[in-house]
Length: 217
Length: 244
Image (tube, rainbow over the protein chains, first blue to last red):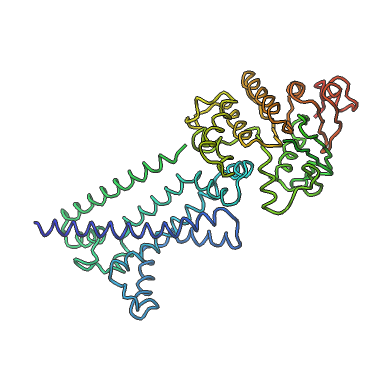
């Protein structure tokens, strides 16, 4: 019984670590890039937007396969030894989550009312101050992007399964364990993990929602 | 603290529709000038060209005799001497203080001067007690007053007012007009008011011009402008007989 509880704690902590780290890294990449692309029209922006929207629908198993091939011994990043490690799983999730946060951030910033930019301009803002103002006014939407990204990361199973390998005690996370539990008819265990998953999502979302409320008008 | 404003041969078109067709206008330093005309003749477009929001196809805008600069740093320095209030101003998400202090913040003004000037500007429009209230909870009249406070807090040398009391009740109109008069008296700033409210133009301005057909039809002191206009079209407009 104690071993099972210990397993669950370990799996839960690894899930939080992998999802939290990948969401954080994706956020750090996607928000500055999304703000930059949302603020100004650059060449090829339409093509980039189309690519991003396509990546929204990127099946996680395909992302997992691509990352697997990249990290496999014969792949270009094989020398890093990341395959079947939590770091490799983070890598895979960053690939899945970054386009989502980037695309939403870009759209939110681009659609901040033109008058916000004009008003800041008229009030004497320079280029940098104008960007900061737009980001501040779009803060609630940008937080939504992070929330959606985290939601994708915590519920993701295909990519982490392929890249992590679901190795007992090393790369097991909540979602992959639920899948294997079901295949072994361990429904009680699977339901328990599912409840934990829901609680994590509820806690994280309530925190982000509170933060979002503070940025609302 | 006065600056002249001159517009010469200004032309602006949108999708082939010629809105401004060679506008010439001169507002003397420290003058309160009213630009009147029916809706859709390009009054707002002219103000937006003056405040660098629109780039005209032709013509020049001069401030104190100097042509408006093209280089961003020089343009920024000039923009910071101009205040503008729009007909339907947008208030930023946040408090009234945040909105009113915005112009000061971007100019590097810090506390305690920042807070003091913000509160003085809010007091000028009767909203000091609501300094910490959310801007999104304001009525249209209050929002317009915040927009005015936000424009004058930086003490602009030129104040552009675009139908700034349109759709407001008489009490709000009176409060804003008094605030304009007080600001002008205190600073001697040059004020250009765009309005189709002829009574307002009479009450506040010393000179007025009539914009019609993309050009300035007539300019005169307000008494002559309203009682003895020289151009037939100006006469028709001030009598309320303007055919649109």
